[in-house]
Length: 90
Image (cartoon, rainbow, N blue to C red):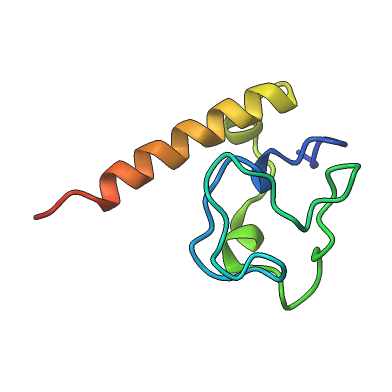
């Protein structure tokens, strides 16, 4: 699968805890990354400044669904489930 044109869901739905150029405190879940241009393309794509989390997102049907809206929902569910898992004290 290839990235959907004008989607940007992977740059909106997840949180990024480390600094990003232009977002030194990271990015909260559900907020647009400042590195998304008006066509929802990453301005840091291919740059060593791009966060590791961003490199890890690969377009897959289970993650991207059939539309940008569905991708936002699916990634948001993943964000919530991993946030809950990381807050569990053992």
